Length: 543
Image (cartoon, rainbow, N blue to C red; front, top):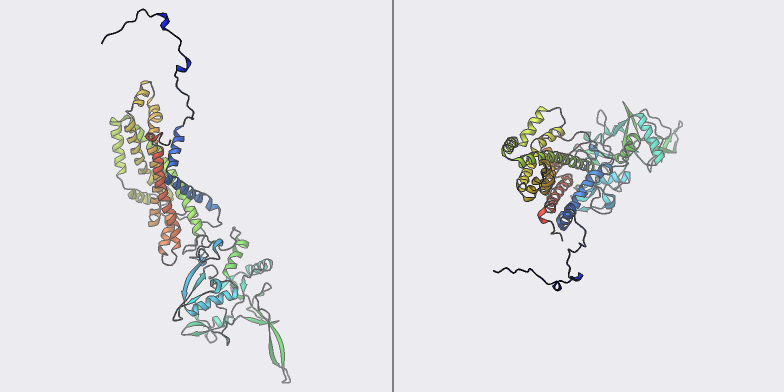
């Protein structure tokens, strides 16, 4: 190859370059994209992760807002309304979510439910519609679990409350107290006049004429086949030491008149119109025995006596077999689970990230000692840790036991993930360049290496949250940890209560199970989306 030498170049060979021939780097028309902007674009491309994020947001909002949208608390319960069906006022005209259940029963039981609604004017049998089996023995209808409690048992209330209920009835026009049945038909010493069996003597739903057959209370219909009331009535002006005074709203038919034949001193028989009034309370030791329709009595108690914001029995998700409101229990349990899991995850992330960063960056003997310690601690089963803490801290809240047991070994997995990421990136060229330029170890660790492993760490942290909720749910479901104290409850406790009533009230387990399934699936998809979004190798793929 020969080399050409140009010593003397003529001047005329030179000429000025034209501006059109000059090439410069063109100016970018687009705005620069930051790390998090690119991550957000990549996340939005994953439709499954977006849907999962929306579901998680809905569940979180439910846990935050729902406890303030109901007057009930997890500590509240009412055994009268045990296993009340879910009720939504928007669905009252349908056969779904209307507070009713399908009831299959005999003619006698159907007649008793009909009689209860006939007295109070409430549709215990929805729309008064029923079907009869081919053999005529089984009656099927939708039974209202709110109105169906009826009167329950005879109640003994104080004279002050008896007077206050009368005031409440006069002011609101709502009927709480109903006429009572004379004690002679319910409970006499010689049982001679009894028309109600002993096992039913306190049953306040029986207000009609009955008889005893084979030691059972049987309804007696009149000649026209109708139900005939058997209220205790006193003639106008008649006094009774057992009848409590009553001056309030009366039911229809009260104050009826009858023609009574009387014989005077001369033996002449005369007819006289006598007005009779029903007795609404019987004096007993300790107060007044009354028949109170529980639906209205419930409203009176909460609006007048307790004044706790409850206006009437209304349970959106129904109640458990112990009478707890499922909606409030699930909302408070979900809120506790989210707060607990997030706090534990953050603590484990901070401790694990610091531990793993030091171990992975420095390596050598430091890494060896730290890893052996973590392995020894991690080899202890979580269940053993919980059991030991539970026995050692017996008087301490189970929340602290659960927190310490989750933290004791929970940070080890986060530390291992951080260590792996530091081993992956610490020998890259940009780390060597930073070290050459004099960057400190702390700056290299948390400015150059840690952000590159952030995607994996965030993904793992996101998956730790549902894992902790699932573990906490399992422990409370199995009864190992009892979180049901005061206004604190757990989703696992609700599922355990639902399992015991699976045959009679499957909805008790339905709502907490749906919450748990949505939570686990959504966090799984959400974690996959975060993994791809924070992966630096995918930067630019969103264009």
